[in-house]
Amino acid sequence: MIAITGASGHLGKATLEFLLTKTSPESIVAIVRDPQKIAEFADKGVNVRQGDYTDKASFVTSLAGVDTLLLISSAVLGDERVNQHSNAISAAKEAGVKHIFYTSAPNPSPTALFAPAIDHFRTENLILESGLTYTFFRNNLYLDILPMVIGDAAQLGKLYYPAGDGKVSFVLRTDIAEGLANALTSEGHANKVYDIGTPTASSFSDIAASLSSADKTVDYIDIPGSAYEAELVKHLPPVVAKIYAGMAEGIKQNEFNVPSSTLKDLLGREPVSLDTYLKSLS
Image (cartoon, rainbow, N blue to C red; front, side, top):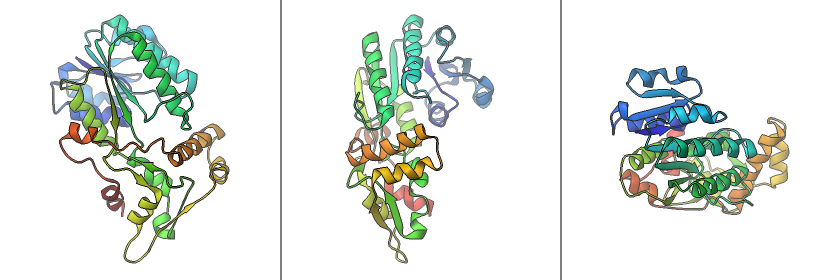
C-alpha cells in the first residue's frame, strides 16, 4: 500500500487524483488530521485514516500495512516542522514502512537563504539516519505562486522584484503531483535524489518578456531586497515577510537555478513551461 500524508492539501489531493488513475483505491492510504476534508476520496474507495504529525502514536496506527510513504512536508516552519517530520519518520520505521518519498526543496542546506530549505536539509538527514529506503523530490518553486509575485505587472508595464539575474526552474504543482504518482507506482527510485523542475531555468527578466505583448512591454526592475521586505511587512506578519524576502534573495543567489530533465522523464512529456503558464493567465 501507498500512503500520503497531508493528503488534504493542494499537492496531496492532486497526487491522490493521479494515483487513482494508476492503482486501485484500496491500495491507497490518505492520512489527514480531519478525514472529513477528503470525504470525496473515501467515497472513491481510498483508505482515509486520521493521523497528526504531532501525535506519533496516531501515525503508527495510520501506517498499518503501508509499504511506501509519501511524506509531504508540514506547513509549519523551523523546529516545529522538523519535530513533526521526525515523528512521522519514526512512526514509519516502527510501522514497518519500507520506502519514504519526501517533498524537499532545491539545494537544502543549513545556511540556505530560503528558510524552509534549512528544514528540508534537517529532514533529509533524519530520513538518511533512519536507514529507510528514500526518494527525495527536491521541488522547485511553483509556477502557481507567480500571480502573487508579479501582481499587476502586465497592466503596469513594470515588474518590481529583488532577484537580480538569478534564475528559477519554476514548475507547475500538478506536474509535480503527476510525477510523484508515476514514481510511487514504478520501480527504480530507491535512494535517489531528484531535482524537480523544468529543463530550463528562467530569470525575472524572462518573466517580464513573457508578460509583454504587442501592445505593451513589461520591464523588469531589480529593487533592493530591504525595500521589498519593508513593503511586505506592511501586509504580512514579519516572520512571513522574512521568508518571502529570503526566497527572493535565494533566487538572486541562484539557489533555485537547478534546471533538470528528471520531471520530464517521469512524466514522459515536457512539463508546463513558464511561458505557457503565463500565457494561460492572460
